[in-house]
Image 1 (spheres, rainbow, N blue to C red):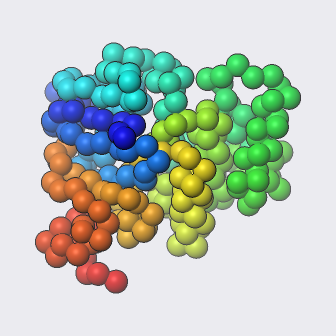
Image 2: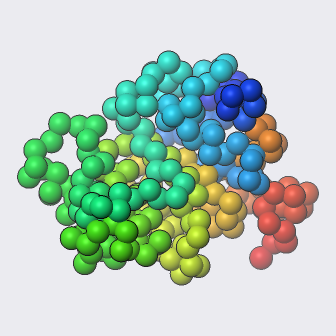
Length: 240
C-alpha cells in the first residue's frame, strides 16, 4: 500500500524548473532513497512533499490526503516530518530543548514532552550525556542525531531525511544509518535523499535515480547496483 505518491509533479525556483513531471511512490513501512548528483532535484522533491515549495503541476498524495494545496504546518500535522540538509540545530538551545521542539505540532504537557525526549535518548544514547549542553557545542554527528530525534518527536508516519551523512566521518555515518534502520523497524516510513549511494542502498528497499529533475531509473538496490551504466553514471563507480 502506497503511503506517499507523487504523480507528474513539477516544481520551480523562480523560472527554473527543478523537478519535471516526477512520479514515484513510497509504500507503508519502506525506506526509499532518491539518488543523483548535485542539482538532480532530490532535495527539491523533499521540500515539495513537506510544503516548503509549492508544486506547479501534478499531485502529491499522502494516504487519503492531497498535499498540493496544504501549508507546511498542515502537512506536519498529517504526519510528515522533514529533517533538512545541514541539521539546523538551534545553537542557543540545549539538546533537550532542541529535541522537545519537535513535538510542537501536537498538544502535549511539559511532563509528556520530557518523557518523550527521554525516550529519544534511549534511541540515541550517544547524545544523552549532552542533554543540557548547547546545540552548537556538539559534533556534526551528534547534531545530526539531535535533528533526527527532533523529527521523530512529531510522531511522523513519514520521515523525510535530506543528506543525513553529509560531512560526517565514516564511523559516524554507520551509526546514523543504524538508527535509520531502527526507525523503520519501529514502524516509520522513510524517504531518504543521499549522495552516499552505497550507504543509502544498504538500507533501502527501493531507489529512484534522478537527473536534472527527471526520473532516470528506479529499482531495488541490487538491480540498481548491478546495472553497469547506472552504477558508473550515478552511483559512484564500480561495485564493491
